[in-house]
Image 1 (spheres, rainbow, N blue to C red):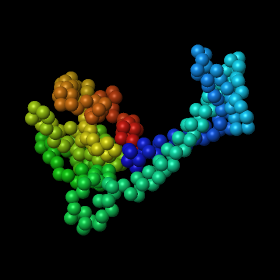
Image 2: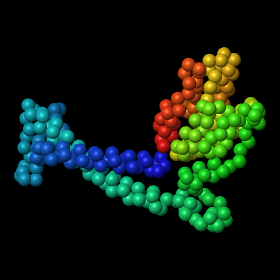
Image 3: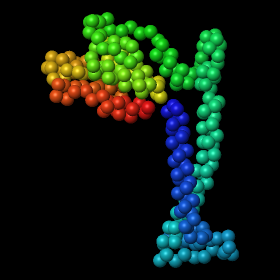
Image 4: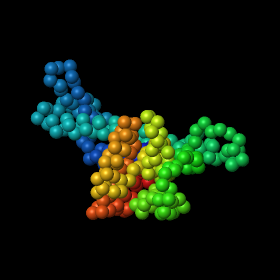
Length: 264
């Protein structure tokens, strides 16, 4: 389920909850409807009902009834509009699941897919294509790539192994040490380049694994400043994790954080 489908579903659930609440409260509301005469300096209130031949004045010392009738009218209007919106949403939910334009390409046989250039694709097809793309990787110190991930590639540390495996298990597409060209033509290689499938946005992840080392820490801070100069910010499109000898990397906390970040 993509982000838009989830938003539609959440809206439907909200409307269903509102309708149930309105029906419960309308069942306890006083009979009749409120009429307001605003022609005078001070509004005058009346109650009117189908079984009444004329409206009945409500004295100002009975403002509780006025407020309850006003609330009743409000709830009735909300109930009517929520039901109308809900009927439309239910039809649209079915349409999103069965008739979306971005499903046309995915539903083609493979031989036909190879013959056409898609105009629009669903998130799953988009993510698969992104993962299949070839990308330049970090050519430096390849002898440090010692730890194998569940996907079969080699990474530089045990912590990165945990991170790669968690991304793989959660179905978050990633590239390891993919080349990134910054505005000043400087080349860098973020530890992970991730695809936020729901928003079709690239997010970078840097793991700062030796933060108790002064020289390493200064290099890490310079790297973060360089990212910021290139529009890559923590909380927007950059994830930072870190560890020291005293505070090692916590895989389970990282897993929970990524599930929440990517809503998977």
